[in-house]
Length: 238
Image (cartoon, rainbow, N blue to C red; front, side, top):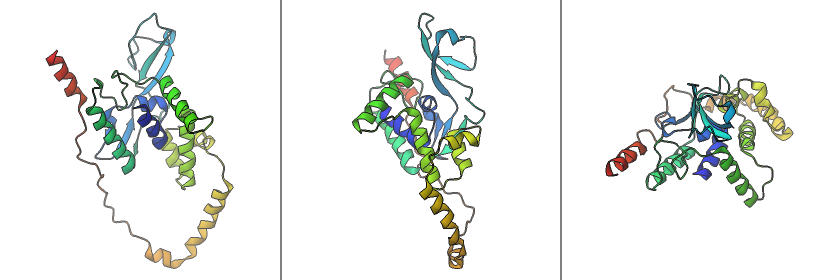
């Protein structure tokens, strides 16, 4: 599960807490999108308020030094977002869910990336696993935030408009998005040079015309596993 969560973080650019808070219901196969509506973070117990309606405290114990909490309010006004995902990532996530369904892992909350115990994965555990994978691949200085930087840089290299990159990352300011990018003179030169292609009239004539029809999502209609049914069956048999 952690490996799938790491790859998903790289492919969608969500913050780690956003990925680990995802539920199966956040994966929409009809629109082929993933939606961010929550954020998972670890905070000192002194900063936790059990009366706060905007957070869910996981396994609250006042004797603990820190707690994992699920925030229902976004980090910024643009943090809550829905982004389109590729066919490859969508299929990857579907296969992951059916693998979970065929396992013995509980998942009472319908999490997209549950732990073996059926609880939320800890962001610290995520980071430890990422470090282990990085060392195995002989890649230095890889942290969860580097995954977001990598996606942002690759998107710009593919000439994705900066405002689109901003929306994917959930930044409130486009200037914040700019800080994630790594300058490439070769890419800049190629982008400027490509403008000369517009001088070719034949390309205008052969360009495909848009008809306004929306393409149906490849995986629309596939019923995803319902782990709540498993919990009810287990309870009835107990």
